[in-house]
Length: 122
Image: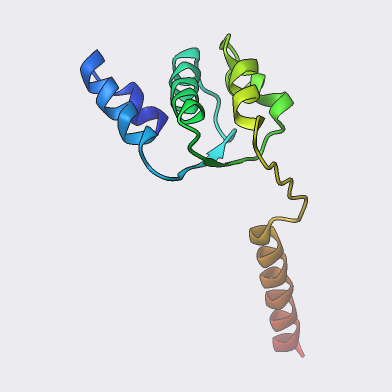
């Protein structure tokens, strides 16, 4: 979404694209925090969040970072505190502390392969 917004070459095109992310009944934003972004991306996310906040439209957002660490995601952005404030106001924050299912599957697969190799040796 952020790359899509940043790629708009005119103010009119950006306005149309912002509208696209403002109108859905629910906007899902996945994996915020896996990459770092410059201030422009933070400003664009802030604009989407603000428009949806003002329209009282929900956002479902997943992140691997605590909101207190979003300064690392958007290191040069002045709007991070306000962005997080709008995201969490009137929000239900669900914190999931669990082992990665991919890591769990990898461990199980590795154990299975070791067991198979040992069985072949005997």
